[in-house]
Amino acid sequence: RGNMHGYFHALFRCAVAHGAVFRACCPVEEILVDDGRAMGVRLRDDATWGAKKIWANKAVISACHIKPTFLDLIGPRNLDSGFLQRIRDLSLKGGSLYMSHFLTRERLRYKPQYRLHPPDEYGAFHGGFFPLDSRENYYENVRIVLGEQSNFDIPPERAMWGMVGGELYDPTNPQSTRPGQYINGPLWMMVPTPQYNVDGIDAMDKDKAKWDEYMRAALASVVENLDDDNLIRMFNESPYEQEFRNTGMLGGSWYGIRCDRDQWWNERPLPEMARYRVPDIDGLYMAHQSSAHPGGLCLMAVGYNLMHILIEDGIAEPGDWWY
Image (cartoon, rainbow, N blue to C red):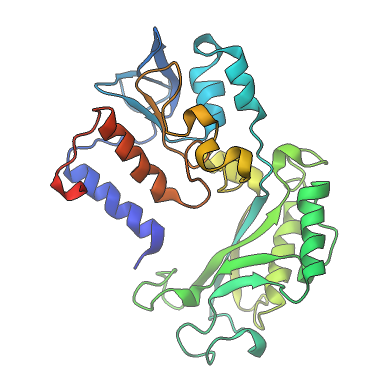
């Protein structure tokens, strides 16, 4: 119970119990490289930790998106220009996500055709993807988002979306801990990647109120009581806003980089980096879904796979529990 959010809290507490130290509000400005080896990191000048250089005893692991890792944190002074160009050429065109959460006074009531159980029973609605009544409608959505790379010009009831319904959570572990209030979400809708939107990187942010209401109207096509009397507040993030909240969301999506054969599996993100090591920089490893196999939403697989590489390289020495 508690889904991925709760799982990461458990991992955090476990790491602290075993001696790991986490520095809050300490953004990294640079990965320090000397003579082809990662030596540590330099923190930004406004970092809360006093010492701005932290030296690595064994290795440096980058858990942020591959593009800022190489283009910003390492930079051209330590990398071959041809290799850097290949990093720049990695495609983000996997489709970005507009994310919405809905805080309500009463549980959402789903129209009868979308219920799994009676409305007052746990698990009445699990979310899913809508609308699914027409393959042609799917193609229309794909044409706009991935073909034209433009904002939607179709009615919200025909825009495709998915959602994690509040009914998915056990009553003992609700999404909202405020008495008498309920959270549904995220509702996600695939929209153009900001960097490729034909109307500019901030095309959805220029009229964000319009798109917030668009998401509400999309959900209202299957919900009976998403009116102002029930809806307390919406929490919405455009893909561009998500980039500022989380560097792992470059392109506004969990994909990190486009998921296709030339950036996938043993090719991800480049063939020579598919085993998490960085060519020509010893002691530097990648640990983000954009820069390591398998990518996508297989978030824990990245760390698990990397652990095998660190053992292989003599960086980590796990106990018997690992095997």
